Every structure is written in structure tokens, then in C-alpha cells.
Length: 302
Image 1 (tube, rainbow, N blue to C red):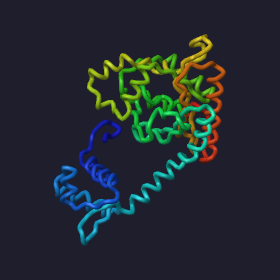
Image 2: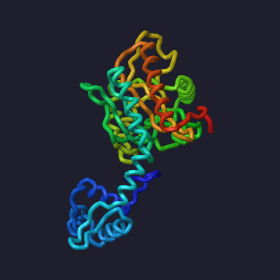
Image 3: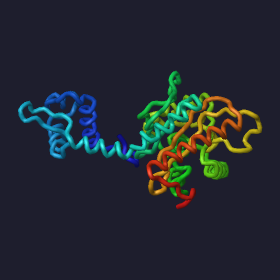
Image 4: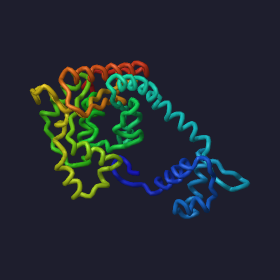
């Protein structure tokens, strides 16, 4: 696990390692020796971790068997997280309707820490989902523009200053036009080449610092200029356009951009069809925002 600035914390990682191990085996309890052996942690270190977690209520210790299992504090933490993402149930209902209408997959995702996380996916029967719930992507250029596009200008600039996952060319004039158009229409239209789609899939779960410099350079040559994948009016006068997806934002109670909902297309469609799908997705996003008590602030507001 990495912090926002990329530095690692081994003691913190060991705590997470203990919790992840027990969560994955929620119906079992483990003694100190077995836990330390399974996780390759020294017994004194493991004892310190489980003692602190037990005292905080995140683990329980059975005095008779001297074994450890998950504790009640995790229930409270889980409920808080569930409430924080309670919008998921609301989003699923609205996105399922859009999925059924256009017979395709929809997804809801958000920035959590320094990663983009897929929170939910809807797909009609017989349609294969294009991503997986829980899938993560690095929140750094060239990934993540849609998560700051409808927020304040400060959020956009902050994202642009992040260390790029891959080398990125910045076309400020095009990016300005992308921001203006997407804020005007309320949705973005993204086009991806087959190579681009494979690259995006390959980036799932990858952090910038985990890629060797040579690989980052090679992959960077495959990535378009930032904003180039967003379709702009006037880019192409043809009747049909190859569209990967359409995306629209939801907002929280403070007027901040929250989740992004997307509708997968993956085909060549006409302008009227693009507009129809964009309008349907924006309507779903607005309905989600209204149900969670959110409100959209003036785009570009600082």
C-alpha cells in the first residue's frame, strides 16, 4: 500500500496484512503462532499488532483458546463505509434502467484516496460486463480526468499536477475545449482504440511507481495527448463515430463532484444516438444526485 506521496509504511502494511487475512477467513480464528507463521511476521511484532487491534475492538481474543478473530469495531466501520457508499443502491436502480434501455453495461465509480474504484456495475442478462466491482485504477494523468472535469478548477489543476502514471502530452487548448464542452452538455463522450482499451485494462490495479521507467516510456508512446480521447464537436464531420463510453457526474450535499456514472457503447453510432444516450445518463445522474440530497454547484466554481 502506498501513501499519497508514494512512500511506503511497512508497520502499517503489516496491520493491514493481519486484517486482510482475517477478513478473508471470517469464519475462522487463529492463534498467535499460526497467524505469525501464515503472514511471515515475527511473533513479537504480530503480538503487538493483534493486541492493539483487540484493545480497539477490531479483533476479539478468546481467553480460553487464545485465538483471534474479527471484532465488533469492524461492524461499525463497515456500516460507516456502507453509509458512505449507500448511494450505490440508489445508483444501481437508476443505472439498471439505463442498462436495460440500451442493452449495455453501466458503472458507478469514484475516487477513493489516490485511486479510482469501480463501485457498482449493471448489465442486462447475456451482456458481459466491461469491468469488475472493486477494480482500481491510479488517479493520475492520463487516468481520471472525468473525476475532476465537473468540479472546481482547483480540483482539475490539482489532478494535473499529480505524477503521471504514464508520460502524457498536455494540449492546454484542447483540454480547455474539452472542459467547456463537457460542462456545457453535462456528459463526456470518450473514444478509445482497441489498443487503448487493452492498455486501460492493463492499468487496472497498477500504481505509477510500480512501473519500470522503460515500460512507462513504451506505454506512454501508446497514449494519446490528454483530452484527445474525448470527442469534441467539430472533430469529425462523419455521420458515425466510434464511441467507447459516455460519462456523467453525480454530486454530494456540498455540491462537490462525487461518483461518475458511465454507459458503455463500444460501437460506431450516430450523433443523435450519442446525444440520446448522453441525455439518458445525465438524467440518471441527476436523479441519483437528487435522491442522495446532493446539489450541483456552478461548474468551474472555486
